[in-house]
Image (cartoon, rainbow, N blue to C red; front, side, top):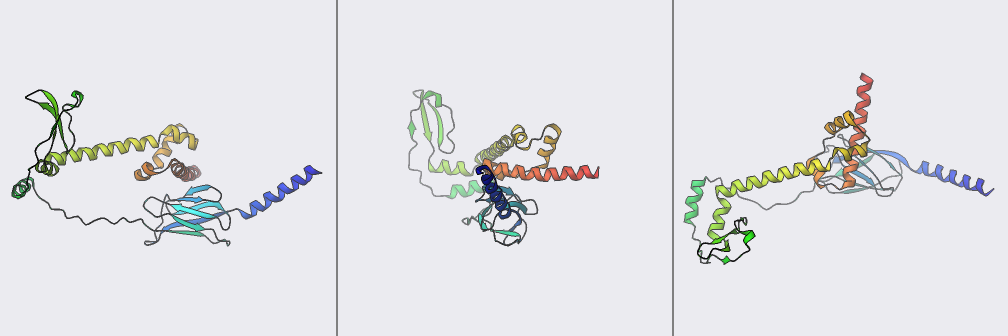
Length: 260
């Protein structure tokens, strides 16, 4: 008798849960331009489930009335939406996150013009060059715009030479400094590429998608996530985005199979 009663209560609970939780569809758009926002993460904070919006800004997820949805996307402010009781389509309007920058005036000077204007500056360089003894292993190393490690040629002891204001200013605008900044930018770009490839490791993606060999290669070409999103996203958001790509990839596969 007790077993029959327990089975009945479980059946009633499952039925009520199935009625309350339904698949709700919705869209994510830019509040100003009214254009769809792709790859936005839509999280149901009540059920702890999440999906990502498609290229057209559409999404579908399980939700009950009064559930709270958190919508986030790179470059936009996070928005919260409460699921209404009716069956209307959910709409999330995202506002871009704008950061105010100070005004910058840029002058296009050639190197010869810079030298001419630089010599006109009345800069007092009264501070003497500071010489500090340093460890031998640091000798010969460049310290960026601050100075350089070297030797005291009189005593042959290691020393550190710090730049004065004139030499530091010239080093900031000289051709050598520009080339060094370009090299730093290039190194940063290469570092970002390596981090991007590491975060989208094929072995890791294969475990998430269950795709192998040729299908995995095709999926990696299909799922092109933005570099900024991949580098800044949490592992959870990255997995959600990859699974969103997987759904679209499987739909494309079925379409191509049907045509074939």
